[in-house]
Length: 353
Ligand code: GYE
Image (cartoon, rainbow, N blue to C red; front, top):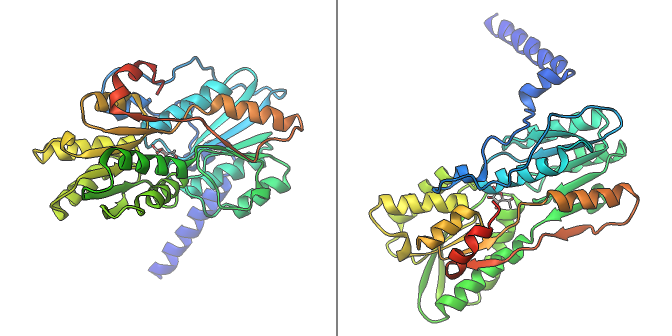
């Protein structure tokens, strides 16, 4: 009997949710719509001062003659992410567009629900930043059947490229190779070097590319040994825990590769708390946040491989071409560089995120 009653309650609850999904307000409980990024990129580091891309923004414009652009973000896990969200807002939250932002909250199901919503409400364009590469076929087909172009940004989907209009982002494989090449150029090919790697979110393009690119180069040299390469989820606290774990497990660590700056901040804290010095290691990081440049000036990070989050204007230019019926590149890479600590002091003022 008890079981029957609880099943009944469960059924009422599920129907309640489904009915609720019809209205924007209830939908926003699951697919949270946020006008503001929760934090700016400066909130993620150890440094102070607001160095986010800034810009003036207005409330959502909902007149029918503006182009409806829906953007689905991954989450708000890093300074890089905050800068990316801000760049999109600066570009699209203007009089020219009706701009709706969905915070994916690190959950692919929330992202898919966001896509469903934009399809149902007949948006003109959907911009998707997929948390992981797998699992997009069905919803992309749905968007295609509804004739809504989907621009995939930052991370990639593994779906057939006929299912979306184009992709704009970073060459993660190259970033991984650049990191390893810098290491080989600076630490040589004879002295034994033990490496630990802190990987980003499993299955995310940035994790996959940075891991395989680094491995492709470093595996050619016998003096480099990867002791461990484990998941830190692009998260500062998880990165810190993982670094503590590595220090407990391995006696001799020479090189630490953290697949984003956020995890590097956690790594630095873990090393300091263990009574050691970050400068005793070669720490390689990715993203190129201003806070990481400050850490390079402090001697705590050796090199940062840039990953450019300021994609809004590039995405807008491609979107306009697409809507004008022009052909666009199926894959478009952002420009980015490699910044060793030696240039950090002269470059830090130029960092926009
Ligand atoms: O490196 C990391 C963020 O997908 C390139 O995601 C992006 C990565 C970036 O959380 O900081």
